[in-house]
Length: 393
Ligand SMILES: NC(=O)c1ccc[n+]([C@@H]2O[C@H](COP(=O)([O-])OP(=O)(O)OC[C@H]3O[C@@H](n4cnc5c(N)ncnc54)[C@H](O)[C@@H]3O)[C@@H](O)[C@H]2O)c1
Image 1 (spheres, rainbow, N blue to C red):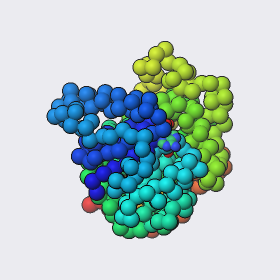
Image 2 (tube, rainbow, N blue to C red; image 1 turned 90 degrees about the vertical axis):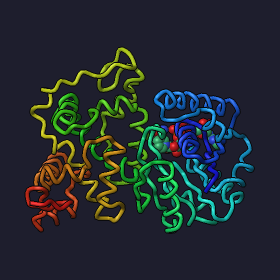
Image 3 (tube, rainbow, N blue to C red; image 1 turned 30 degrees about the horizontal axis):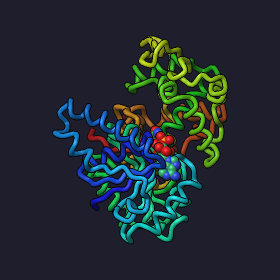
């Protein structure tokens, strides 16, 4: 593979183009107007200047010269070995683009989508080569985020998976394999479960958002509070993501009413000066006192993430190593969620899930069969020498 075709030069597309050029690929970067392409090049130059200042690259121009901004879709498609589509999240639009790529690209080319929430299998149906269609899901910002999820559609063949893994490694990124295009894939599924349950806990008055954020930061070592993260991401984005998950997956259908309420009030988070916290400026960080989380049981707050990870594992969607890599690199947690579970004890995790399920009827807290089986087999985690992982006594 030599030439990469990036379609859409927005938030993700310009970053993906930059990552590919940094790795030495020739890149075509396509969008619908010259103005948008110019803006994308400006953003790439700005980012390359930062890398240059940090002495991570020797020449800005060398990298930029490998990126060809273009309005000529046909030429770019004909000359490329892999396409990575990063246009807005519309199934119809993506299908149109994949149908065109299918006609124009050579027979061995890989057709990849960066979609966060649409089924790869459905996008692939727009082509005559669904075996060569795959999800290559970068995290934002692509230049800084180490993780890439590689998602198999129902028809994706092993060769395409292998070449996509090699391609992502050649970018200097860490791929994890997602064997089925379940909504949210691995990382956003686990995050979605954790955030949903945490939000329900606040909505129902079990804990306050400050208490939870303090506990996850200071007791579990997460880089940010869960509600701080919501404010940072934006309630509009959170609301749309939750809706997309709820529409496609019954496990996520119990949306947290607080998110819709805040969204409707325009409390979108940092960008509007108010979300769960208040912000005087965009660089403001919320005040989350260390002692605020004292009464919080952090296992109760994060157990839904373990439950979702168990579901992914039991359904053969990802390996335990990939799940934990995804959580560490995609969410910035100091440990994988299954490592946490082994430390807390699987029995403790199930006790908390059962509490949440009995008290609030939360589907995401219904203990997964795999966790029950582990308890029955005495695999309770570190304390018994085996949980998700084995431990030397
Ligand atoms: N933003 C994120 O954090 C994030 C993270 C991972 C994945 N994604 C996914 O990446 C994709 C792109 O998201 P984004 O945030 O970069 O969106 P964006 O709106 O920033 O960029 C989309 C770009 O596509 C262009 N575009 C629109 N119609 C087009 C067409 N017909 N042909 C070519 N280009 C067209 C737009 O002009 C725009 O520049 C989505 O599928 C999204 O789900 C986003």
